[in-house]
Length: 474
Image 1 (tube, rainbow, N blue to C red):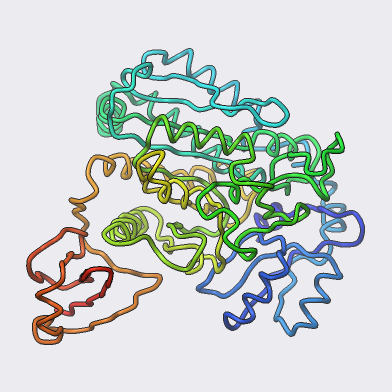
Image 2 (cartoon, rainbow, N blue to C red; image 1 turned 180 degrees about the horizontal axis):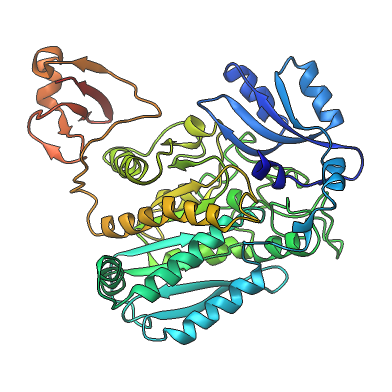
């Protein structure tokens, strides 16, 4: 709870701001909450709640709607006055500031010139660089090797993404060519993969949190009203609603209104920071990606814009890899945003990285929502180290998997978040109509096309455009 409180800062001096956990009983209540475009910090579909920052008027509005709420902190201003002031206004603590990240990544580039290349892939509205480091054994050459991409800080108040990305850069460089298990792994990845890492996608917003805001600014610093100065009540775009795939699909998953925290921008790819990621993906053509966010401790897959998944066999591939990462390294729930955090989001990075397959190949992109608050580890390095332990093996795993997605040799595949069982049977050959069996393609729990059912698990039958799921109990 202390970490959660530390992450919440006063964002509106006109009246008190409360940290409130808002519960919903059904989809109708959930959609009523989302229709207000509140400042949602996190959510969990399994618990049916959102953490929301709200003022007194908004609290009364929700109360009049009959929504059940639990106030975590009644008055954030008073809370921080009692604590002697919000020190993280001017000090990121154990997290990187933007300048600290710049200094360290430049030092790494100078120290390891044979396996790194530091690029400025774009510039923000305030002319801050969007930095990307390529790590490979021939970093100046495109060797047509399997490629991975890892990003942090699309949202300015989520510093753990920068920490995880910087740790992975250091880990790869420091272990390259060294003996032992970590050395062998890092050496293989650097020699056989091209790895791109963007620690801070949103340098303006991140710096604004350091210098001006109270640690809770989310968007970039676009001047929405073109009046020549930055107004925190109106300006800024949510970079993770600005990607082109299904941008503006509806007004539930993003907002057309500039004051809202999930404002999607005036057009798809309107923001220079998102344009930079687009151009990097078009050139590097990654097969796998993780975009780091916080918080909720969940693994998100496409689709974000609707409550559904990509078509088979990619659906199985996505969920099988997510299951492996969850089972082996962090135990987090996984699935699309609607089934895990309780709300849809359109114009997001994962949907575009996977869904856009004309200007570039598809990329199996995930979002990791890390931790239990935004500034959870501001005074505790051990929390950051724990979160690195929960995420670094997942990056290594996906880089290995970037070689071949068809031959996914998972121990098991359990569709945890949402399993629509069309057939539940101990004998598929008897339970499924013969005509359907003969006219369908069968995919086993590993996503591999087969001729007949093998051991138990979740199988997929595809007949033209029809898809059937078979839970084979054995």
